Image 1 (cartoon, rainbow, N blue to C red):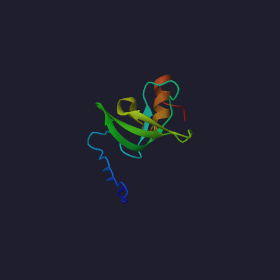
Image 2 (tube, rainbow, N blue to C red):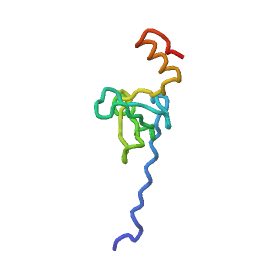
Image 3 (cartoon, one colour):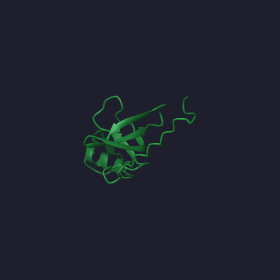
Length: 101
């Protein structure tokens, strides 16, 4: 006769992700480095993933896309929006002087 008790498995413990090894945090804005297709796109870190080899990984999302991407830390750079004076600095650098008032 067979044993009527179901085969119960112990749930796997959640994998703890070491935040000390990850340079970016959930909610930060980043860009992909060295890409032509997504150049200029800003992504939001949606999750930290376990390290694959030597590089931590992340899930990232762009508001214009209907999916999330996975990217390694080596492929990402922190995005900081240009300062308010960046336009004036660019004009000064390009034309050699401050814009006329």
